[in-house]
Image (cartoon, rainbow, N blue to C red; front, side, top):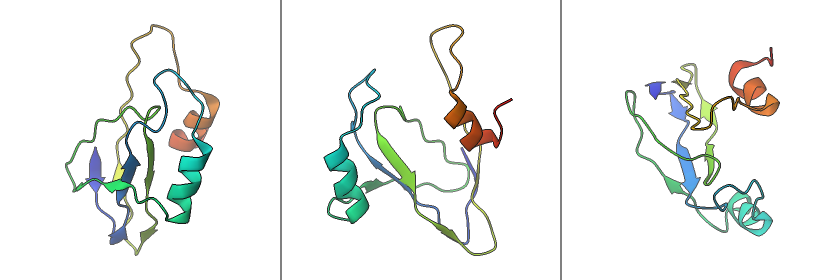
Length: 100
């Protein structure tokens, strides 16, 4: 949920179904095309109060660089249907800034 829009940037971009379900591998050629600008990702029209539901493990996604004084503030909600599954160390560090 986007709580605060930044002054500039912070646009949510995505490529649908860039990875097969339940497969952590990435399509390196697709990633290269997106990063080089050869393939343009879709952009979500997201404003403060918007909720985006995405299976992040299946879709390549990113946010454009944020500029200005006002930061982009969001709440990330995560759901796992399998009991006992937790976020991996990389994800905990990225979202919370620590692993413990």
